[in-house]
Image 1 (tube, rainbow, N blue to C red):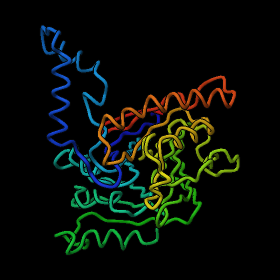
Image 2 (image 1 turned 90 degrees about the vertical axis):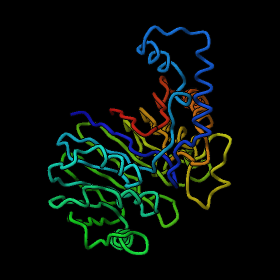
Image 3 (image 1 turned 60 degrees about the horizontal axis):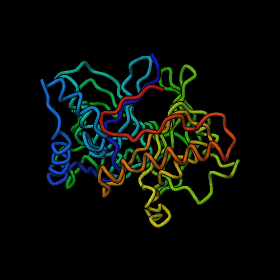
Length: 324
């Protein structure tokens, strides 16, 4: 089975679903675009919608971060447990067979663990939930998540068994056929990036990290080695091109320009931008794509590449599925 990932949550900091005013504008723009079009059936309507720009026919925002990694053994593996984890759980049958779930936590900030509270498998006997992290406070954080006054059900009342696999900085280990590597990141209270490898393919998930100015130009910058020739790089591009991450450095996030430069210099095949700024609307997020593609082409010329890296740039959205 090829290495694949699914996005259940792509918004940074706080869930940010589309509101009524934004939906009304999308509908108005779409209906106006159809003013000279005649539809013979529903299929022709669907074909018309599919040709619209994504920000007009869909939305980039919604749940907070949760990425599923699909392995050859079909083990349920996730990176981060934002509110998207609840959406995954809602997709399960009412009484699924007991399983072992692996959840990798980049760090313990609220937007990366809040989905655990409504993760249905945690309330089903026979399930086992293994939390993989490099934060020694993980068990205490999860116990507090399931406690008054924050939540009506106490941790000790959960039916599933929890296990906390706490690793040391720089750890490498395996889950099934996946080989996992880790790298510490610059973020308040620290976060860690994960590199998942199997069958000659590599997926890197690196969110919630602040990169210094011109860090990508340093050949010894550890992220260049960590990202090197990965098939998929999922990267925190919270700030768009007209927004400076450097002006928001207390939050510890990155920007799309940094994402493209690191991906280009590390010869990444596909770059997926996630952890979208909740205050940005879909049009603002969408506008960044053209700038990112132009920047990648300019870097290919600057670095004397025969091909452009990354080969493909994608703006993540809830429901996106992509193969390495």
